[in-house]
Amino acid sequence: MRRQVKGARQLPVLRFSLAVGAALVVALAYLYNAIGHVILWLLPLWLMLFSASYCLVWIARIVPLISRRSVLGALDEISVIPPGRVFIYLTICKVVLNRDDAVVWLGYLRRGLAVLVALILLMTLCIALTLLAEGSLLDLAAILVDLALTAAVIWLEHSQSTALACLLAIEAATRVGGAVDKNSVAMTTFALAQLLGYCLAVAAVIVLELVSLSALLLLFLLLRELMISAIWRRILDGANEEIGYLPDAADRPAAIMTGRRKRAAARALAKRD
Image (cartoon, rainbow, N blue to C red; front, top):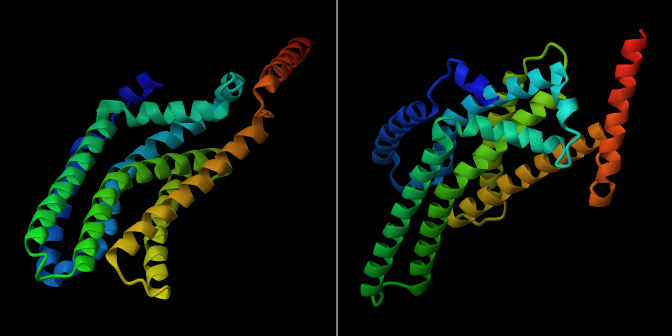
């Protein structure tokens, strides 16, 4: 799989993502001059736009790899190993994500931005402590919570978007059949899931009358974790149903032998014919 990924002419993920990120920074600076501090409420959208620049490329690579091996029957042959079919899915995702170490460098970039926000948090804390007599302690705590959650969103959004892209690519490659373009389905679902998570967070903040940046960011992270957990559970259930894989470790040899017997019977039938 690694040779196949390297052999194909593909878009350089890291350079493309940095170019998109530079364009988004320019747009962000322009919007800040136009709408001021309200731009912080749009931070999740900006981060998701940046994540989409490389997550969509990864989806376009993962879906064909899984689909091609499923059509050729390779997944049925190697999914009888004890880790099961899900292990094969995750291996394909790791092969794609680690090409040119793009996921590593993008992770470092997100951590660097999060550290920068943490330094701003410390500077704000120092300045606020000097002016504590003039301000309220609750206002100081609110500012610190907002900055801490901003740093957490910058750091965690990359991991959440990457996990969501991989899981949706697996779902599209294994569930979507017929003449439907699986790449288009996976990309469209990814974009809708990203937008849905943010819109639900905004709606919940408005309905619950918790109009604060910290509430929005916290709900944004929690809703995305719920989506990732639901899709992950669906993939596990589908893989177990496909290969008859039992979760109990004591039953794994029996499941493996069942798969071997099926293949042996198929080969014997083919020879007889």
